[in-house]
Image 1 (cartoon, rainbow, N blue to C red):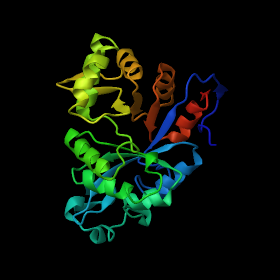
Image 2 (image 1 turned 90 degrees about the vertical axis):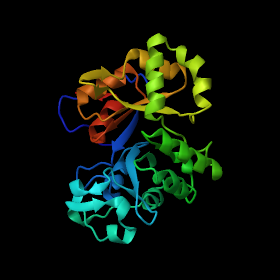
Image 3 (image 1 turned 180 degrees about the horizontal axis):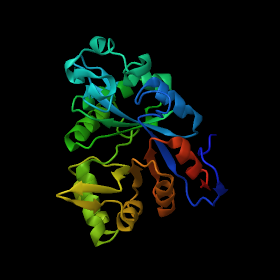
Image 4 (image 1 turned 30 degrees about the vertical axis):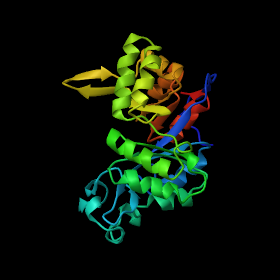
Length: 275
């Protein structure tokens, strides 16, 4: 298993298990969100692949962070306005193609995928794909949009997968847990039954350390939030962290997972190595 590519490595004691998430795959030698970037993740035991989904005009769930290919391929036009056939005519750097979700899940049956649904259409197309694969329990689906998340949950329930495929929290659910943490870790215990009448439950909060809003920086990840989440059965995953010292600090703080563009370095932190 690769260790961080720097010197002065010493061994420290691990205090808990840390899940590692390859942000859009491992893109050191290939473009993000491509089959090649997912292949690189196979070297890291138990690693998740964090991916983003948009849906083509003809209803194919494809893997892309942005709604267009301007940034990654220099080609204008929205994915939602293209057919999958049109999309396949476009080359990413190195001749790679935008893959479908089905290609990724079938091509890498031993990898786990954390799927962020970026558009509302994906709330329908992603569950459809999960209904076609073996072991859909190796997938978590999430969305910042509560509307998208709620629709996906209904689709999963129609397929009998709602108890198999975990959901990540939406911004609304994360915000409510964040606010409740101001009043102590048990406050959410009293609020949760009411909230879950209207919002599907979740197994994990996936958050940044901080957030820029209204001209100021808000610290999202606090000891109070972490304690509230853990007391109430939620995992806490933090994105997107590439600095080794920050990885170690979050690991020591007790987060359950870290999303990173450099899981080659993060793997060393997980194994108890530090610079």
